[in-house]
Length: 177
Ligand SMILES: Cc1cn([C@H]2C[C@H](O)[C@@H](COP(=O)(O)OP(=O)(O)O[C@H]3O[C@@H](C)C(=O)[C@@H](O)[C@H]3O)O2)c(=O)[nH]c1=O
Image (cartoon, rainbow, N blue to C red; front, side, top):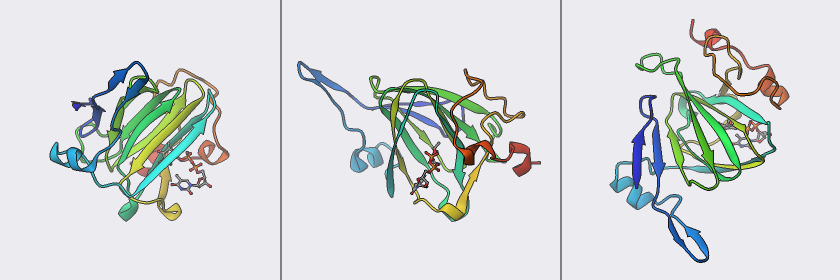
């Protein structure tokens, strides 16, 4: 397994070995035993999958308190621009963000630990899949507006397709003055 540290502290880019043959390809998208042996996150409690048409932007989301979630994210089909934002005030990369282009062909995954806001833009119609270290808890949901003026995430779109809920998310500064 190839594991690369991202520029954001504690974010990992994970590339499992892929076995190709005349039929197509096979890879282990997760294995709690081998991942634990390699020191990778291996305890997840929930798997999620979403489908987004091209131009949809979901995020920036996180859960707070005891329901804070680490997320292992990947794309099954299509292509997305994934973003992680470090919202840990004591982190050297606090307030920084990083893009990860994920698609259904490279089989690359990203582990985004607790303490990050997360979102993605569907560059094509895409199926997005992710494992979470804590379960969904509506009361613990937090979010930051996608085009936050302080974070200045360089999204390659001006008018993405966004849920009503995400359109009224608060700013980064409203949490961290
Ligand atoms: C996230 C989630 C949503 N839901 C429900 C609530 C709602 O009725 C419906 C759609 O929820 P949302 O609009 O929040 O879905 P979505 O915007 O896809 O939310 C996701 O966005 C990405 C960027 C993340 O990082 C995820 O953690 C998650 O927050 O699904 C669950 O039942 N369980 C869950 O774990």
